[in-house]
Image (cartoon, rainbow, N blue to C red; front, side, top):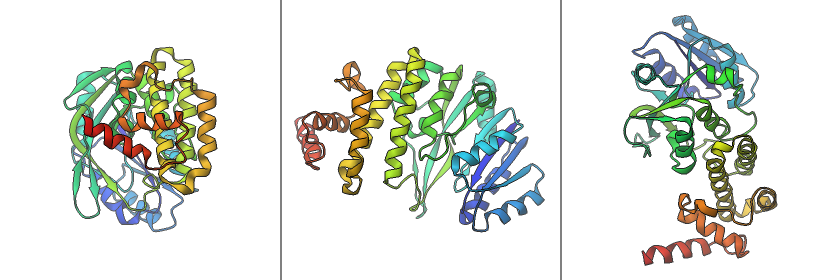
Length: 329
């Protein structure tokens, strides 16, 4: 019934915990696809050892191609009616598959999304502040709006969800290679093509917070990936008028997030020409327009600094404005 795809690269410290949590699932009709993405540590050996103890496990050994490439390799061989993604340094609740599948069948939806813990190295766990607090069934347009206008991490990532596999095959959805935050390129498309989506607040996934995580690092690759995501959103918006206004909100938020990161990091200032090019070729004179209510105070101040040409000269003006406005509230 369910194919679980685990992309793996140099995480031998966490891998057994991840696989064990999948093997302990109370729902047992599983296909477990371990994709060893050219690991240089003992991950490949660990995968092969697990394959010998449980015949539900398939192992793919491949040349390193990145997280997206590994996930795509898993999707290509998956036989299940449904798909799940579990990152190899994370782990899941014993009943995650059962609970998600129950909701999938009860509400006759195409995607089920749950809440999760941030799992820290010091043993502390923090519950994600999910924007939707109770069991909720949304249609595709409602979900796209929630994703772009009421941002929360649980709606943004691919790994805390169960999907009908046909969403990927029917609409030729694959993860883009070579980018950070690759989930941002496809998750909104999955929402759009799904007929209905169920969101629950059960905390079923444990998201490991690693100090050396690529996603958590501020880098030029991070910014350039976000710029490519902006372009991807814009292309999709041109082809789908029914969600164009929500996509535009997402594009503007990503753009202002890039600007904010560059403000804080002098080493990234050389990327300002890339950002200016985005503004010149994509945005109209008014970035916010009628959708101003969907933007944070921080992003509003960032935009003001852009229009007054202070954005790359005065790093702390943004925070001064925010402090003044907060004091007046």
